[in-house]
Image (cartoon, rainbow, N blue to C red; front, side, top):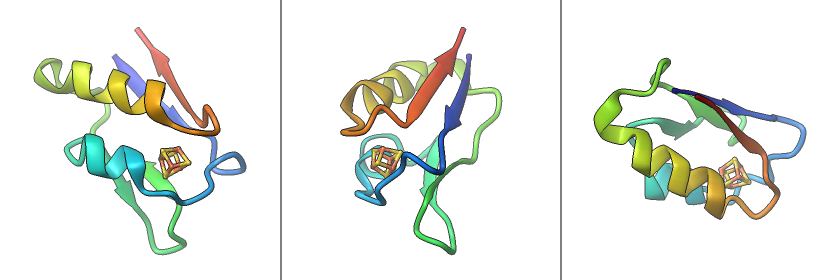
Length: 63
Ligand code: SF4
């Protein structure tokens, strides 16, 4: 699995980094960035939950 953040769609809410800090981190511009690529198997559920929870659908998942 791979995760991607649409930087233009991210509103810097921080939710993804709270739900799954192993995969998402807020960068210097306070935009979410993916820090685990590919997503380790043990964090796939968390990454998916973060994607599902993103208020602007900025996170996409590629299986
Ligand atoms: Fe950005 Fe979505 Fe993550 Fe919020 S949950 S920081 S809007 S990518």
